[in-house]
Amino acid sequence: MRIWLTIGLATMYVPVWAAMPAAEQNALVKQYCAVCHTDAAMNGGLSLQHYDAAKRDPTLAATILSK
Image 1 (cartoon, helix red, strand yellow):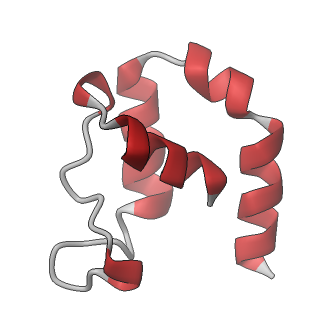
Image 2: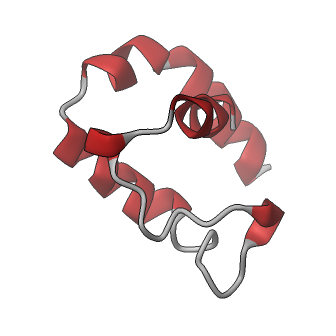
């Protein structure tokens, strides 16, 4: 249920995410995503522990927004 809520909110707020400063994006990823997607756990084959929106990989950013 939580994942569907996250997906629904992410699709509604894509324009907001793009306009958000990098520091705020990093804080959101750290609070909501990097908790499970760590270097040690690699849930879904993805680590967001060192994510930096200022040096964003477009493919990774699209993956985050789609999830």
